[in-house]
Image (tube, rainbow, N blue to C red; front, top):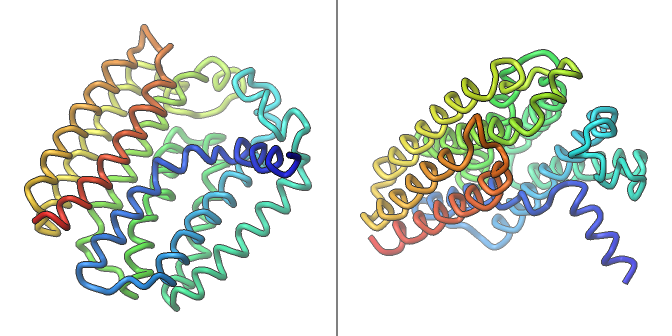
Length: 287
């Protein structure tokens, strides 16, 4: 049916499948917050709406801002906004509506969430321009998405507490690290267009080394989550599996072998996010 095709097209536009990277971290934050503060169905629903709308706004804005690069890059030339399946006016409307829904859902979640909503959107939108002037663009992306667990915690508790920060830092370094891996596909294109991704600026070997360092920090921060919330030991089993996957991810992607970037990027990182959520679920309920 036509409306199903439309939904599928917009899903491709905003890479809906990539929701699996950050959403499990936000859900884990809700589980952890529920140990101290009751989570109502209303609050949970608003958190999901806020997550979906913020991501849609950010991805839509990125498509709008990077349109001229997406047209030139063979890897992105088949995206719906480039092929004409979604026109730029529709992208602009999507961004505007999604941003409005995010701010409204934040307002319904409480005063602090409302105060945080505009800066969060600003960071997410600002990321789209950072690759034009700094190789730290990956860290900006990580920071923006990494706010999700902290935001979910604030939505439940009404306040920001130190104990949720390791989970946010884990997501920040995790996202930044695999965004560097993903950018290795575009080294030559980024150099041709004077874009400042870390692989383009420093070369694949140094970029992959930096990515490994970030993912090592991810593991450390996830270990700190165990101590911050006194989770059951079963969480450590899931953390061990995450460590194995991180190791495997960096074995798959090497400077002389970048053809498995997509496997590492989507399949391995999806598994890591899901294992994190399951680990927190098990560590919370099976203490």
